[in-house]
Length: 160
Image (cartoon, rainbow, N blue to C red; front, side):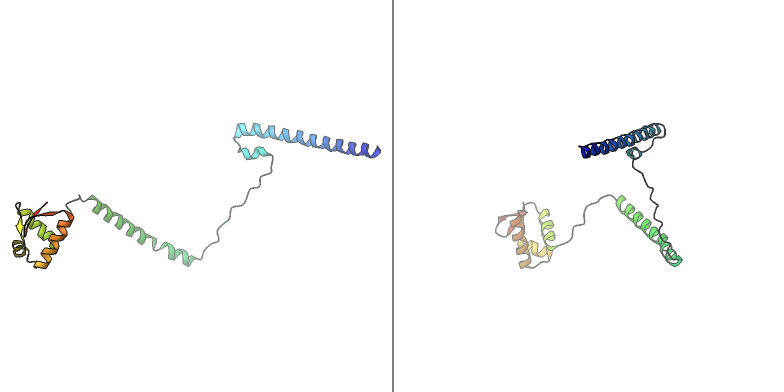
């Protein structure tokens, strides 16, 4: 019984100490709340924890030679960038024209066929374009597969 009474007294004492600490913390919290209302203090200060300000890391100073070398070429790079931007602006302002059509044998044959609405023979294509029989026959075969031209009669073709 005596041991139990001693234990209860110790527990009672600890509870009283904790209640006193709790009262002190609540008073500090009230003060901080009032300060926050007037000074707009950050809410972290209300937690009751001690805040430690960390020192900012100061970068080590570099030797003067490296600074000079790094700062000297910068204007050249900026000037080069400005020239590139100007060149891009100039090219962007040009209106879009018709794309340049490359003069391939196929394009030659198709342009001749455009002139002849009723159709053109292989012999005339050979004379006008200056291409060989083999080239013309290959071009006509490919174009007919793609559906660009159609055969009207033997050796005579027309645009589709």
